[in-house]
Every structure is written in structure tokens, then in C-alpha cells.
Image (spheres, rainbow, N blue to C red):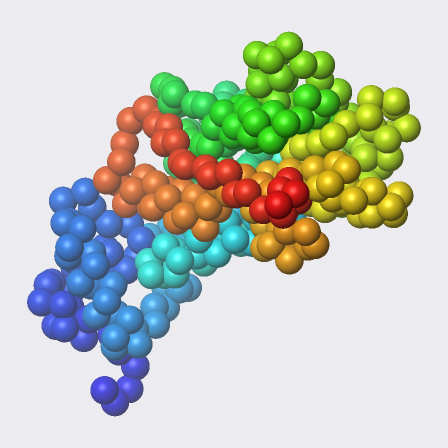
Length: 337
């Protein structure tokens, strides 16, 4: 096609009216437009190379055509995979994604909520370590939908906040139960402060309590490799003498493995190590790391689809909660054979 494709061209290719194309490609939409029509229009736009005039759209619809993804640590490999999943959905609907980092700080989390409420973005997807549901009230009242990525069971509520969650308590219980099944009775745990760690510690303790085994938890300021090294050194100096260490995330687990190697301790023959998240590095370390897969790309896609349903008016009313799966991935860091 000569020249730049227009909405009129997309309408002709999709067999619908230009008004319908405008509603779909503006990101506004209407509940009455069938999903099949949405797909046909977005495919036609992609095939024709349609590029929207974002500035004109913003003036016409009072939308920024931008989604904020608020995360505690953009350097943690868990989050880029999550963001990639979000973009898989938003790219097809002509939305951009801005990722911002909070370091798990209450002040920064509140700052970015205020920033979003000023009309900088049309919707928010985020992982929040310190905020409660009520803190999102002003944002929702301003017409900015919110989807939270959570690490514990949620039920939805009166406020129109949607939650996508993995049951970290059940996952941590499963990891600990697996280690017990491998013959370990002295299992230590390392964790950072805030976020999902508390729920994962409770799952770990519940599994040990069922067998009458003692727990030993070391919490470091940092939820990364450095924190894992320091926490492992504290365990080794404590006299607890573990035969297995469970870390609340993979970065800490990799730090634990480094600390053990520095001491000449064989993994898993002398001390087994397990993590949580199944980041890409979990398969690359030696030995490869036993961990919990959360399928963060799928989580991101689900969160983005949920947010778009709110933005397009196809989802209204009270908040909802959707549980996502997890899977224990058994690898060399806990297997002696």
C-alpha cells in the first residue's frame, strides 16, 4: 500500500466501520465489541503497518496510551520477564509500558501512585511491598485501574483493584516438604526484608512444624546475592549446622551457593540449596538450582489482559483475584544422584 495506512484502510480490511476501528485502536473500546472483532481489527492494523498518531489520540481521548509497571527491583531477573509478558499484550493494543523501580520503599511506592494519579498513565500494574488496598483508593477514584501482582492468597474486595497471585505459602511449604523427603531434618532459611518473604517463611515453618523439626531463619537487609552470602555466613557461624538451606528467592540462593563454595562446602553432598522464582540464572549455576517456577511471563500477560478489560469497559465493579500456578523444579543443588 502506498503511503501511510489509515484507520479507514484498517476498517476496510477488517470489514467493520471506521468508528469501531477507532474505539479499538484508541484503547478505549466498548463492552459490546466481540473479542473476535478486536482480534480481526488488531491483526488488520498489524498487517497494514498502521501506526497511530499518539499525540492526536491523547488529545481526542484524554488518554496517555501508556501503562506503568511498578516493581521493587528492576535488576532482579524475575521482573524483566514479567514486563515482557505485559508488553506482549499491550503492544497489540498500541499501549506503551513504562517500568519504574521502588526498591521496595514505602515512600517511592506512594510517589509513583501519586505520579500515576496525575494522568501520566492510563493504568498501573505493580508489585508493592508496603501498600495496602486502601492506599489505592484515590488512584481508582481518579479512573486509573490497578492490577497487583501478589504473593499470597487474595479474595478480591469492594475496591476495584484486581489481584493476580501465586500462593507463596503453599509453594514454600512444598519446597520444605520436598527437602524433608530428601532426608533433611535441619533446614535453615534465608530471606530479605519486606515483600513476599514473610509468607514464604510461614510456609517453611509450617512444613517443619508438621514433623516437629526446628526452624532457623536468617533475614538480611538485601534480597539479592549479597544478602544471600551474608545470611549463609551467619547460619554457618550460628552452630545450627544445616544439611539444607532454602532461600526466599533465587538471587539469595545463588549468594548462599557462593558462600558455601568459598568455605569448601560441597553442594548438595554436604548442604543442599533451594531457591524461589526460577530466574534464567537458576539453570546456569553449578550445580543447577532447585527452585519454584512462577511463570512470570504468563503472569504478566494475565495482568495486562485484566487491566485492558478495565480500560476497555469490559470489566467493571468490585475487585477480583486470580490464582496463578507454580511448580517445584528439582535440579542438582538438592540431588546427590
